[in-house]
Image (cartoon, rainbow, N blue to C red; front, side, top):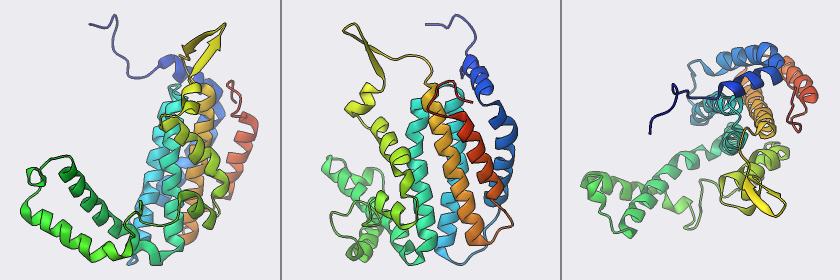
Length: 268
C-alpha cells in the first residue's frame, strides 16, 4: 500500500498549534533552560567518588528525557509524553538520592550483577540454552559475581534498594511530585482500566476510541518534564558547586505555567 503523498514523520498541523500555544515558552523559556542544561551536563566530570559519577550520568539522561517529551508534545501525543514522565522522575529521584547517600552506591552498581544472574535463570526456565548467547567463561563469571554480592540482597528483593520509589522520593523532598509524575503516568503505561478509559468516550450508548491530538495531556507532560529538568539542574549546581543560579529559571517556570494553566487544552 503506497501513501497518497510524500511521507511526513510528524504532524505539521500540531507543530503549528503547539507553537501558537507555547510561543512564549519557545522564545523566552527554552533558550536559557537549554543553555543551563549545556553548562551543567555537557562537561567532563572529575570525581573519584562513584556516586558522583553515576549521578552525573543519571542527570545527563534528564535533558534527553526532556527532549523526547518535548517532541511528543509538539506532535500532539500527550498520552505518549505522559508515559515518559515515569522513568524521568525515577531517574531524578535516584540521582538526588545517590548524591545525598553515597554509602548506597555499591548496591546500585552491583545490582546489575543480580539482574544478569536473573536473566541467566530466565533463559534456563524458558528452555533456552545460555551457551547460545554466552561463552562458558562468561556464564561462570556471572555465577561468581552473583555469589559475591547475593548476601546483600534478599532473595525476593526486586530492586537495588529496599525503598520503594515513593519512600525514596520522600527522603529527598520530591514526594509531592509522586502522584503526577509517577502514579498517573504508570496508569497509562500499564494495562489498567483507568488508562483505558482515558482513551475512550461514550456517546448515546456507543463507546469509541478518542482520536486526534491530546493537547491537555501534552501540556501536563511538558510541565512535568520542565519541572524535572529544573530540579536536576538545581541539584547538580548545588552539589558540584557550579556557577549557575537556578533562581531565574524557577521564576520563569512559575510565571509561565501559572499563566499557561496546563489543565486547559487551549494552553498559553
